[in-house]
Length: 79
Image (tube, rainbow, N blue to C red; front, side):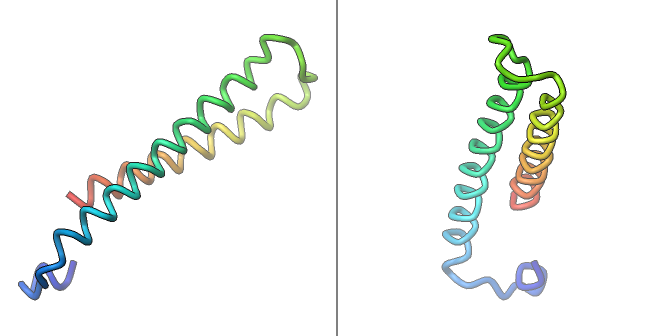
């Protein structure tokens, strides 16, 4: 960021930013999959899990959602 402000950007800058954005997009996809898995397990449709353990899936889903949100924030910042 300081290099951008000081106009000291090397020729490889665009390539580096593109690579970072691709990695962030991949991470966000993974986090969204984790959220979906956690929510599915939390629903406990097949009644596999005891009610007392379902809060762990809520915690898992919540953490994955926060990580996804942070990743999206970094993506937007990289623009």
